[in-house]
Amino acid sequence: MAEKITISPVTRIEGHAKITIYLGEDGKVSDSYFHVEQFRGFEKFSEGRMFYEMPQITPRTCGICPVSHHLAASKACDVVAGVKPTPTAHRLRELMHMGQIVQSHGMHFFELAGPDFIVGFDADPKVRHVGGVISANPDLAVKAVKLRAFGQEVIRKLGERRVHPIFGVPGGVTRPLNPADREWILHEVDDHIATAMVGISFLKSWMQENHQMMEEFAVFPSAYMGLVQPDGALELYDGQLKMVDADGSFLELFDPAHYLDYIAEHVNPYTYLKAPYYKKRGYENGIYRVGPLGRLNVATHISTPIAQSEMQIWKQINGGKPVEGTLYYHYARLIETVYALERLKELMDDPDIMGTDVVAPFGQITGEGVGVLEAPRGTLFHHYWTDQMGIITKVNMIVATAGNAWAMNHSVNMTAKRYVDGKRLTEGMLNRVEHAIRAHDPCLSCSTHAMGQMPIQIELIGPDGAVLDVLKRD
Image (cartoon, rainbow, N blue to C red):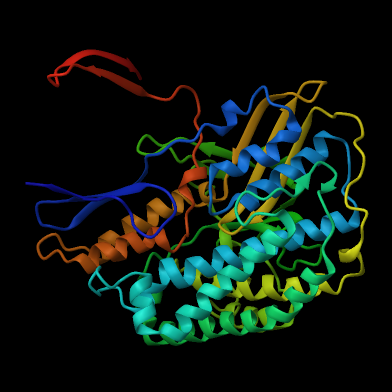
C-alpha cells in the first residue's frame, strides 16, 4: 500500500509549515508538497486606514523582518504623499536596512541553518540546534550571537526599538543620527566583518568536503531576479529590477513601480503561499528565484572590496553562468552579510549621514504608491492605493518569501526523491528534506495573501464533544 509521510512542523524556520511525502508501493517517493498553512490578512484589514500609518501597521506581519516592511511601506508612502526624502533621510533608511540584513542573515546561517553544517545533517535532533553549535564551537557561536546583536543595535539606535522600529515616515525619518552612535558603529563593524569571513571560510571548507552534496541537492535551472545599481552592481535598497534567464542571458530591466507589467501570481491548492512568475512566459515556465542566490546571479559585481573578492569566486562556480544549487543560498547569504557590513562603513563616511534635515514636506496626495527593496529573503513589494484624502482603498504586498514559493516546493520534491527511502527511513533523510526549505530562509508569517475567498469551516461543539452545527465556506 502507498504511504504518506508528514513532517510537521518544519523546524528552524520562521512561521508554520508542513511537508507531505507520498511513497509508492516500492517505498520510493512519488511526490512531495510544501504546505504553508497560516494566513495573514494585512492587505485587507489595512483598508480604511490613513496611508501614513502603514509603516507602523505592516511590520506587525513579522518579528524577524519588520524593518523590511517598515522601509518598503515608507517608500510607498513617499510616492503617495508626492514627496522625495532628503539625502540624509535616504542614507539613514539604507543604514537601518543594512542593520536588518546583518541581523537576519547572521541569525539564519549560524543559528537556524548552521546546526546542519556544524553539528551534522544526520546528528541527533537533541543536539542539532543552536545549543549543539555552542557545544561544538563555542567561540564561533558567541561571535555569531554578537553579529546578530550588532545588526539589531544599529536598528535600535536609529528607530528606538530592535523590533518594530519607529523611524520611517513619508518624506524621511523621525530623527538624525547621533554622533556617538556613528562612532560606536565604526568601532564595532570591523570585528563583525571578521566574524562573517570566519563563517565564509567554514562554509567553503564544508562545501569542498561535501562537493557531491552541493552538486546534487535541489540543483535546477530557473530565471533569477533582484535589484541592481546603474552599473549592474548588487543593490539592496534602491535601483532597477533585473531579471536573467537560466543561462544568464538578459531578460528584463525595469522600474520596480511597474512590477505588475512583468509579474503575476499563481494560486496552488495545497498552500496559502502564492507563486509569482514572469508574465511573458506564464506559469510554470516563468518561474524565477529571488533572495541571495537570485541577487548574486543577476548582479555583475559588488561595489565593496571584500564582498567583491568573494563575488569573483561565486562567478566561477558554474563557469560564469548562474549558480543553480539550492545549498549555495548559504554562501550567497554570507557574501551579502559582508557587503552589508562594508556598506555600513561607507555610509558612516558619507557627508550626508550626519545631516539634520531628515524629513521633506508633503506634496499632493497622488493616490497610489509602490515601495520596493530587497528584504533578506528576496524582493519585497508594497503597493498602496488611496482616495484623495489619503485613506487606503487597496493594498497589494508580494512578500520576499513568495518569490521562492515554487522553488521551495520543487526543492522539497527533488530532495525527497534523492534522499528518502521509505523502506529504511531515517531522521537524517527527513532533515535533508526540511533543509530544502531552510536553505531559502523563508519568513512564512508575512508571506501569504489570498485571491478570492478563503475557505473556512467553523464547528460548534457541545459540552459532551458532539458537533452541534457546522458553518462552511469553500
